[in-house]
Length: 159
Image (tube, rainbow, N blue to C red; front, side):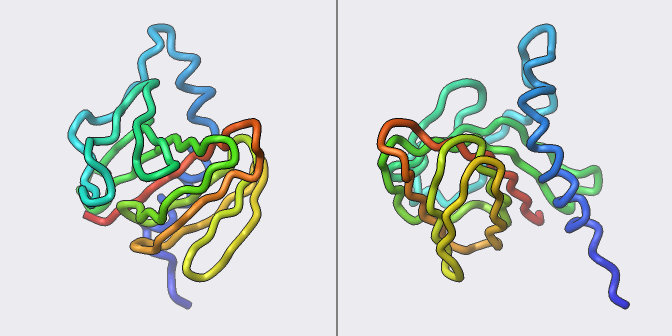
């Protein structure tokens, strides 16, 4: 029987914990997000013009998609990195196709969206999640004409 690689087990654990991140971060007395790294995000720069911001400000990542990095860490042996992003899609908007810089678990935090990948087109609501393999293009449609969709993305990339 083949054993699951350590980095996949770590990815699954981080994906589960990512849902608890906002609770932990808001509990910090100083209001700071701890443990993030300030180095620039290594992503295909053709997809966007500026580095992904950290902190409360979202910036345009692609047409119709706004993002910010909440957390980033690299494991001690520098085999992989894990990032947590906050994504927003405006009311009634559709995003351009995007590729994340690694395998991603998308967790819908508010609203309803149709997420399309090469393999599937799925309608997801609050609490639903979807795994996007590394290198696969994704587009998202917000089904609500009045409220934005909030999605948490946990992205894991081998170094």
